[in-house]
Amino acid sequence: MENVVVKRKTKENMHNVFAPYWAIALFFLWAIGLASIWFDLGNFWKGYVLDMVGPAWNYILFRGLFTTQADNVWTRFFTPKKTLTIFLFVSFGIEIMQYFNVYNATYDPWDFLAYVSILIPLFIIDSLLTE
Image (cartoon, rainbow, N blue to C red; front, side):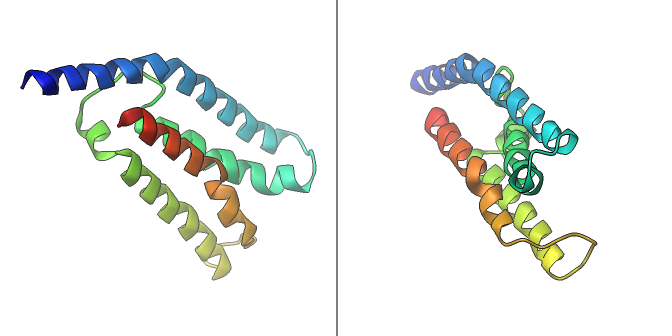
């Protein structure tokens, strides 16, 4: 029992140590995403940057990585694997709906790569830090 408490405290301390770095990453991803709407810096900027940073900043938000460790229903549900899986289903689902013209948007198969380009590295880092 004592080992479990020590392990939990260690994970909590690790989470809290890295929280400011996650907060900085969240801020920069958010700022870049907004800048991609406000400024026209070319086709890549307009076409892919928001698809890259949007799922990434939301991953940090949903996982609560930017704040002190909390143990509640939300944080227990949104584990790294579940969060990644949900975000991949949603992102890919949006693109598939574009392919089938469910709503007025442009399908682009390169968006699949854009969605995972930052999301997967964040998941890997998060998984390594939470083990």
